[in-house]
View 1 (tube, rainbow, N blue to C red):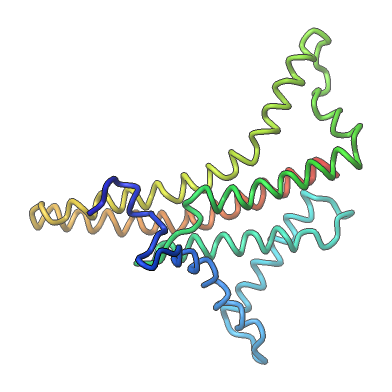
View 2: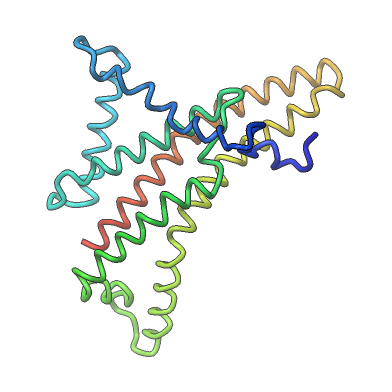
Length: 223
């Protein structure tokens, strides 16, 4: 029996091992189709998606950073597969936990900061004071910009985890009330859950794109 509502997202298993985290690697099963001799429709669609993402990331990062878009396209792919797989029954959603999202956001932000402060120190210092700031407000602007820079990995991680767990919680709440309602209300609940599942499919793509595009913007600030 559940001790609380969030225990339905507990990754523990009966083998005293967190085997549910293995669902993170299910996205690898979609990769071998790219090695077929004759490309499938899925492969052609995904090629168009990656080319579109490459063009968008290249504009944000500038033409000087050739090859860097591959990292962010891979990040988008990894997140989207995990978000989508979490919508299927009995598959653990790893991106709904801060352990997963913070483990991706924090090292990436830290690498950007280390690279920027060691290689472009003056550029990073100039970012702390926006252009046209009065001299009396400069100390406050430095403090505000420093705080906003430090909380970036936290906002990236919490945004993804909160958006993924919110829809799952709502679906769980609506599903738990199905045993004690009339048939008419049950049909309304089923219709609402189908609509909510459609919305969650869109959220899975949007949150992956937002995470990747914000990471691209943060990296473009240090170069």
